[in-house]
Structures are given as C-alpha cells and as structure tokens.
Image 1 (cartoon, rainbow, N blue to C red):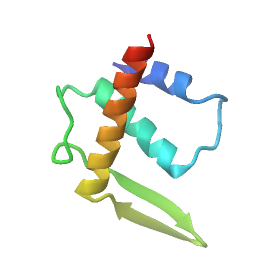
Image 2: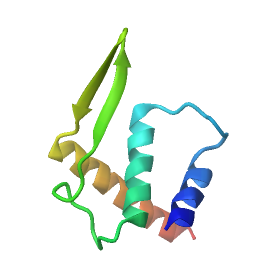
Image 3: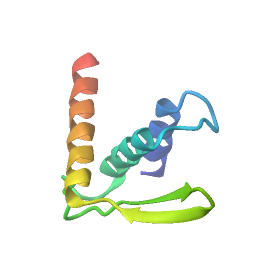
Image 4: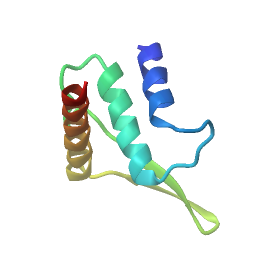
Length: 87
C-alpha cells in the first residue's frame, strides 16, 4: 500500500517540493486514502479530514463537514472513472 500511495503522489505532483493549493491537496489526500485504505468504499462517516492553516500569525484548525468530505469523495470517484476511461 505504501508503494501505491507513493506512486500516486509522484504522478500527481509535477515537481518535488511543489507548493499546491489546499483544494488540490485535499483531493490528492482523498485519492491516496481511497487507494490505500482497507475499506471497499469510503464515506463521510468513515473518513474525517482536518485542515491546519496559517492565518496571519495564527495556526487555525478546521475539521471538514461531512458534506465537504462527501464532495471530495465524489470528485475522487469521478476522477478515478475518467482515468479508467482514458486508459
């Protein structure tokens, strides 16, 4: 599973140490988790995602709502289907 995660990360990031936007990082995290977790299908009930961001001089933690996680999961599934169709 570790190799699958590393492979996805290498394919998804164009350059090593590339800075990515939060939305892309979240989609990538969900994609890696979906590929490597033992669950047959991920749901917002099975997956919690938190975001730690620097806002000014403060670090702010926010846990994503179930609806936000659901959107990320649907986007990951759609991307997976598109990749299968393209190959």
